[in-house]
Length: 429
Image (tube, rainbow, N blue to C red; front, side):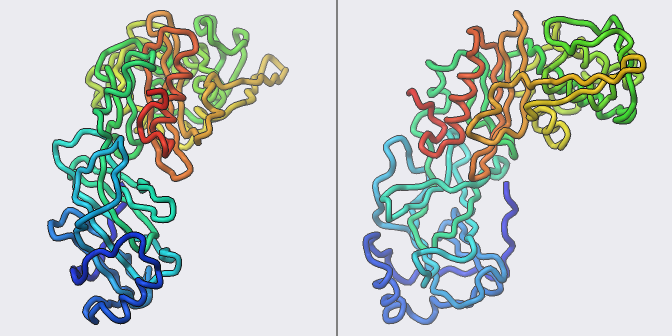
């Protein structure tokens, strides 16, 4: 959740009734000049906050954001434009004004903070009414579930403002079109769950395991330039880098090979590079899982080939949130191509590696990913992505049974989470 602005002033003004939304900007100015009393005018240079009568909405101006006097007002509206058919109000509707402003735009954004009911579990956002298009538009922002507050920003100088939630419970949208039995969509920053189904069911996670492998490696990194000789015991199928016993590869290249093409032999060699015995390395994987609060997670080896590596979508979200703070992890999980360099005797050989993730060409910006597949686990996928408004989510799907469904499931969920018109509702429902 974005930091709330600390303002040096906090006042309320309730001096006139809201104007009809179809009045022109000129009439607004005339109203300010001839109707509004002088007490509604204020100098905003030192910061300012308007609060609703019930303290469920605050609209703030940062210090020095607006260095001039403006007329300000915040009132509960007695009438308002029709609410979208797929939304329901979960707050009062207010009308605010910071005027005059050319074309209803301020040079600096206003910060909005709104409180929502504690028992409201549906997806919710702050909306303002856009008069030129005659539609309600949601504002990009954050959520703090510990204090039941939404936050957002807008440069709109005056508007109706309200909180709305999806009419249907979030799980209702997921019953028909998603093949993956376990799904979870969460806000990337706060971890607030936006959509889910079966997210607490323990399942094998295949190569999603490798995120924990690299997490333990990072805790025991022997140095990025250390050369590791490949051993016969590293060889695995099907996903691997095609090397020979004795080939020497740097830990950095093994790191990228573990995450981008999800090479199992690279993961084994990367774990071995730490100097930890196999049992000790796996014990560290489980120890880290426990430290992250992954109570339904267990690892038995570092590749994900064993069905004994199990977790839930809820648990895996905690690992993804933690590990994707690392810049190199983000790079290695989102890079499309990578060139690995190995030493074979006196020869230097370069290998071209391709990321196993087919979502990297998404219309959204992919900021983290991991793929996984075994017969026992099904098709598993984790994606962190953001849209042009920088709304960022983490989506996890586990156990898809139909070939290719992990990709179509993910595309549908990303579209639901990050496309304005979809608003967390699946497009086909």
